[in-house]
Image 1 (cartoon, rainbow over the protein chains, first blue to last red):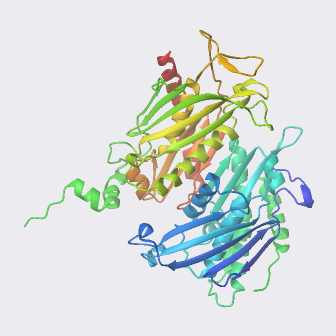
Image 2: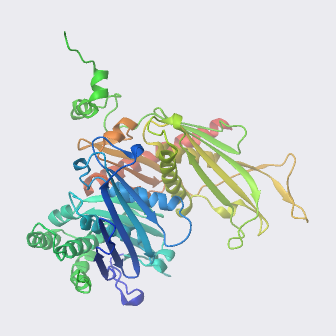
Image 3: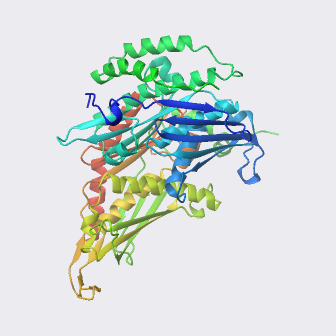
Length: 276
Length: 279
């Protein structure tokens, strides 16, 4: 599983698609972000802290509500489940105790679904929350992986799969990592994990490792995007980047990881940022 | 006036403080060790009107599952595949936290999606085995789960009840005549379903930085994160579901995987015993 494979559109098996983000597209919302990973694209808006319906009111903190809208088709159980997963990941990082008896609404609108949509949606939500100036205690970022089997029966891990790769996969994983923890220690920091399909232990572990290093790129991207927003006050990013490099070289990773290290800088260089 | 507070009063008013007295001693208020699951009781065939049924109790959490079979026309895209329709109900009587319809819908759909993903995406059941006649008649299984009492960890109870009920299903022998009408053969044999593997779940939560196995609803509410690991009897990972909460490190994850793996054999044995007792 550690070998790198060329996939469609010339991507390597552990390479992310190019990332784009745009903040503050919507005027009415308190914060909004359009986030793209390859062709998958999501628009997220944050309203709040604002007035809350009496039934959702919580005495000691803000209630966080997530709405997940597909591009087309009727909303079903799967969307409810997506809302549930996104809310569960975001609620603990939002400092809800600062705004008792209010509501924070997060609306996710899928614009184009070309795979890894849940990860793209979560990353968009984090950017929108930061754009809205809602205080959060840490930055989380998400990456999905798929496992495909070729004719010889050997399994290959594909990071950030697109829709055609997801359809042919035998197993899928979705991970969310706490960016600060991963940047500091280079390990741990697992916030969410959702898997489907039968996975061997080693497949799961490689997915975890690959997603963790992918999520570091997304984390750095999110910080860089916010840094370009004129009103944002940020903690210095420099020392975190240094620690990140030390930490990742210190871990005795598999050969998969070694390959990945070289790849990561390449991936990040083709990340395209739009001026705000 | 003398101010006295009994343990019960402290438990209600300061539940977290109450737990913090117990956990460092390695014991929980219900008398269990931190890494001990509750007593699991599995019984099969408790509903006589259904084709297959099971009742599962994890401590006081109890789930009942009934499976009804009907004949239907298969989809054009999959002419040989039977169908499986799953629904999980959390009625308001099962827990004080489910008062409104929306609460129940949110949890229902989450449980349904999780169980359906495990059953269909890991290929527990061959849907081809439900075929009666190619592109004209297949079985559809209506799998209904009721959570009778929700004292934490209802996913584990629900999944176990579905699995036991599936192994308990007895489909009657049927024949199809020229006019494509399906009828039951009088006095015919019954057919049971073969499961390819048994995905066995175990849930964990982290409370006050301590890892607790098989949490009760009280522990779930106080915990900083909850997650469920599902391994099958062949040692393959079927699902690792952690929707969010506080981050965990890899050591804890490894430890939990091992605990789950060690338990699968015991639970599969319980399931088989339950089915044999019915025969």
